[in-house]
Image 1 (cartoon, rainbow, N blue to C red):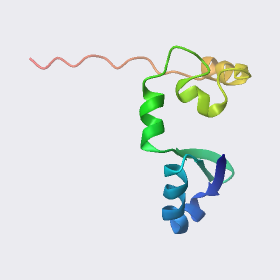
Image 2 (image 1 turned 90 degrees about the vertical axis):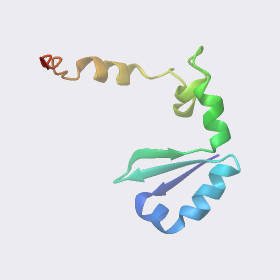
Image 3 (image 1 turned 120 degrees about the vertical axis):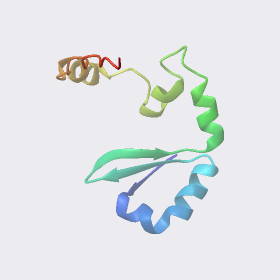
Length: 91
């Protein structure tokens, strides 16, 4: 189950949110209506850290996998990227 809380709510209810995450709930923290942080249990994080073989596993599974993420892929590919920095000669 995912619990949505605002940044202002988590400031006052942090203990409740941590308990919910410990019990297996996902706590989604929003700021101005946008998702910014997710709280999950340490056990679940350990499981997610080791799962990267499949789009339905790992951190992508928190967002429902890769299905339907075409818009995200398009935005990333269109994003302006800066060139690498020039190397610094330390001699």
